[in-house]
Amino acid sequence: MTVGIVIACKDGIVIGADRKIVRSRGTRIKSLDDKIFQSSFKDGRNFLICSSGGADFAKRAMQEIDPNKFVEEMDCSSYRDMVEGKIAYLTYSLRQRAIEYDATLLYGTIDLDKKPTIGHITSTGLTETKNEGYFTTGIAAPYAEMVLQDSYSKNMDIQDAKLITAALIDRIGKVDNDVEGVDVILLNSKNKIAKLSWAERQGIEEEPLSFDFTDELDDLRRVIGEWQAVWEEALKEKGKESKGQTKKRT
Image (cartoon, rainbow, N blue to C red; front, side):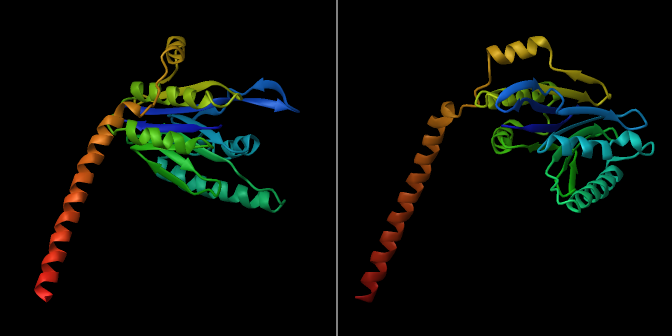
């Protein structure tokens, strides 16, 4: 159950992905730990990217859009325009050979204005960038979206985002035997990279976040009861109005 997540925080970006087992005729042959790739712009700004979909296509696309190949001091707006052209051309080239490109990419970096910036590159080459929020990709993206809708805030820092991302991917991995682990990388606003520590990995295993909504059911039932009372009161008022109109006619 593939999932990739990138989050823009107030002090940097967090990117995470599952580690997926590769199988050959039903046999586990190796573990992939390279769904997150690291590169940089020529001015030294780090660039992190992850993918879902066809792994070979994703690697080909990453080579095409590697920011280290282009001019220095390229801002994210210019990079986005370049990416759209490159992916569109790659898609066209593959279709000429009756091959359908199906990879989706997520990336994060620090822009020239020092703002954390994340991007989402669809299989058609369309690219969206933003300085707040998050993007998800993969089969498990709807679940990740549901959790992040409640968990994310624009004031979130990379330390909290790191734990939420790792715990979320770990949780998804519990229902997929082919997910062997979690990769999460941080890039702070000072352009420094860090990964999940051993202690953090152990802690997530020992004390997983449940993302369980049962604790909130009592509050939900109370609110539903309040709205039900409003509805019933409205029906009573409507009934009184109908009776009054009937009396006037008679």
